[in-house]
Image 1: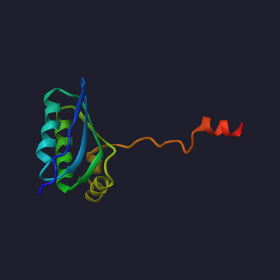
Image 2 (image 1 turned 30 degrees about the horizontal axis):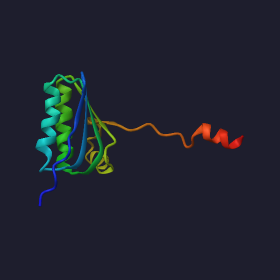
Image 3 (image 1 turned 90 degrees about the vertical axis):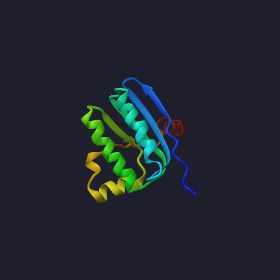
Image 4 (image 1 turned 120 degrees about the vertical axis):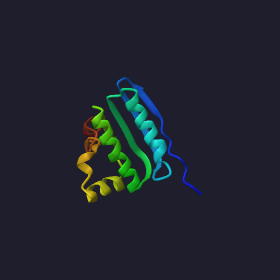
Length: 123
């Protein structure tokens, strides 16, 4: 039984788009993911933010797709930013030496504690 296709919701705020991928990015789901991302470029989107936080699997074919799309967006003058990538994707890009070709956005670190809560406890 083939894996389910990823859910690919898209929200636009011209000239920006946010795409939230979930599920698996592999050989069977690549056409759908590619179609949505390429459509963004056809809509003259300048920045494509891709949220990967709900991706459960990204194989080598998924990495290859993201590299292809990064090149395509760069040629069109747009920027594709990958938010919250799975560890497996980061590791594959590190092993292959391709990480510099992708624009990974990591969340800023949270403070180790909530300062107002600490102050309240001290009173």
